Each structure stands twice: as C-alpha cells, then as structure tokens.
Image 1: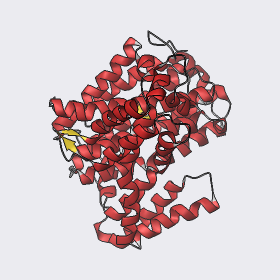
Image 2: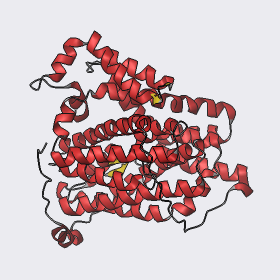
Image 3: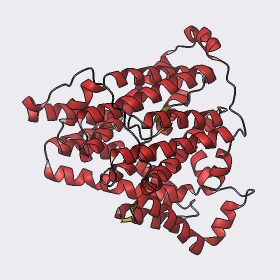
Amino acid sequence: MANGSIERGTGIKEALKALPHSFNINNVTAALIATVFSLSGPIILLINIANEAHLTDQQTVTWLMSIYFLSGALMVFLALYYRQPVAIAFSLPGIIVIGSLMKVFSLNQMVGGYIFGGLILLFLGVTGLIKTVVKYLPLPIIMGMIAGALFSYATGIVTSVQKDYIGAGLTILAFLVSRLFTKKVPPQAIALVVGVIVSMYLMKSKMAMGDLFYAPLFIKPDFSFAAVLSIGVPLVLLGLADFLKGYGILAANKFDAPVNAMITSTGICSTIGAFFLAHSITVAGPVTAITSCDDAGPKDSRWVAALIKGIIQVCIAFLGGLLVPFLRALPATVTNVLAGLAMLSLFLTAFEIAFSGKSKFQMGAFFAFIVAYSNITIYNISSPVWALLIGIIVSLIFERENVKSFLNPGAETSGVASVQS
C-alpha cells in the first residue's frame, strides 16, 4: 500500500488515445455482466429499504440518482486516469446497517451521520493513515456484525415464500433452477426477471412507470452525537472493509492499486452525496472481481470494462425517476426474496471470514453477530456500534493471544489475509 500523498496516474489524455485500441469482446462482456449483477440485486435492496423507511418517491429517486451518478462518474475518472479496473458503487453492507437506523433517526440525522463517515474516509486517504487503520481493524469481528445485520434478510426469503407461494415461490425457484442451465448469467438476474414478470401478471393495473424528471432533494444535516456515532462509525468501518476486499482483489490480479486515491475519492463523493441521501460511496468488491479477472481480457485493457460500467451507472442515475415507482409497486414478498438473494454472496463471505478455521476472532465475531442480530438500541446508540464494541471486548478477554498476534506488525493478520487470499 502506498503511504502519504495521492498517487499519480497515467492521465486521462493518454487513456483517451489508447481507448479505440483497447476495446475487446472480453472487457465489453465483463462490463455487461457487472451491470446485470449490480441491477439484479442491489437496486432492489435499496427499494426494499426505502419502502421499509416509508420514503417518498422523490426521496427514493434522489437517493438512487445520487449514489449511481457519483459512483459512476468516479468509476469513469479512476478508469481513465489510472487505467485500472476499480469498480465503485454504494456500500451493500452499509445499506443493510442503515436500514434499521432509518427507523430510529430522522433523514436529517442520517445525513449528518453520512457526512461524518465521508469526512473520516477523506481524512484517512489524504493523510495516508489508511494503512495504519487497516492494521488494527479486526475484519472477522466486522464481518460477524454484518452477518448479524444480514440474518433477518436471509430468513425473510423463507417467510416470504410462506406468505406468497406464487410470486415469491417462482422467484426463488427461478434462482435455483437457473444455475442448472447457465453459469454466465448471475442467477439473481434471472430471478429478478421472473419476479418482475410474475408481479406484473399478478398486480396488472397497479404496475406503472414513473416520471422521467424528478428534482433531487437537498437534505439539511443534523449532527446529533447519537446519530453521528451510530451511523458514521459503522459506515466508516464497512467502507474500509469494502476497500480491503476491493484492494485484495486488485492485488490478486497483480494491479498496483492507487490506495490513497481510492479512499480519498470515495470520501469526497460520500461527503457530497450525503446531502442527497447517498449513504456511502465505496469500492465494490464483487464488481471489481468481474472487471479485473482474466475473463475480462488482457490485463492492460481491463480498465475499459470499468469505464463502460461507470458510463452505464451514470445513465441509470438519470432513469431513476422511471424505475423507482415501478420497482416500488412490486409485492413486498417478491422484493424481500430478491433482496435476500442479492446479499447471498455477501452473507456467505461474512460467515466464512468471521467463523472459518482461519479466523482468530471467532468468539468476538460470534458476539458481534448476536448483538447485531438483536437490533438493540442503548442510550440512542444502535446495535452495529455495540456489536463492534462488545465483539472487540470479548476478543480481548477470551482471545488475548490472537489479539497480541494481530497487533504485532510482524505477524500476518487474519483479517487482511482473509481478504487477500
């Protein structure tokens, strides 16, 4: 990892010169697959959270437009300036955490927490402290907290099918059966198509497209201590966890990732986007894996996959007004299944890192899991913060030797090793 200043890239001008000769079937296909992946689950999850928080169409459109526009624009810039396949998106575990917080805090307080999280990430990038923070970040405990926050969405798949045998049942069936016929198209994408078709048939007249133009809302922040702590701290930690996954994937594919630039730029975008309800702009691990792997073509042209994906994301942002009312009209049982399926890989990864034999923090991760799943609030501070705090305390008591090994700069930390392996 680089220390200190922001890394210099090859430059946008040089990239534009090389662009006509850098297109190939592999990087174009990778970009399209990455687009299908990002549309087949995350956007449904956002709609699901917005519905649970009783957001208006305009508020939901503002949220969708801000995260897709900012992440897409940043993805285009990083691809052109550094010629690396760095994928940027909104934080998927972050949206799960804030889903419960939206029931506790006002939108103004949520924005205050988002801004605090963005500024911390910006500070870590500008000062180069990201390397130091990562060294003392127990990733298994963070993943235990994520798994706890995810668990209700996983069980929601089962309860939704119980309530709706046709809509939710056919959606999950499409997900399971699709894997038997193709491995090139994500099963979540096929489930999305089937879920939408079945919902349109069942609801008929209730399904309608929205308006193309919605004026985005500017939300004034409220910096209450409880909100800043409950919202900002988990988003910072989850943003760092997302960064670790993305960095590990790029390193595994032999890319010299611009570490400080990645953290600094996502911090800037997160801070700006916060005023428009964007909860966190971060490095997208799964999409980075798609755009940076061998299947995306020759190594020196894989950045084109990220470029194309970024441009598509910007276009999606301007279609938010049409998409949001339509997607919000889907039955809750279907969106619950799609949201759960969208988090499947993240759920499995969180459990693997938190509780596998390689983890040195299984006890701490377990307590972080059960506290996060309990969804408790103490002194107006929500369960994600308590989950991390209690998980660390438990590890300090029961896993002292592992903690000493983790804090030793010369020892290999299980957290980073798990991400980079």
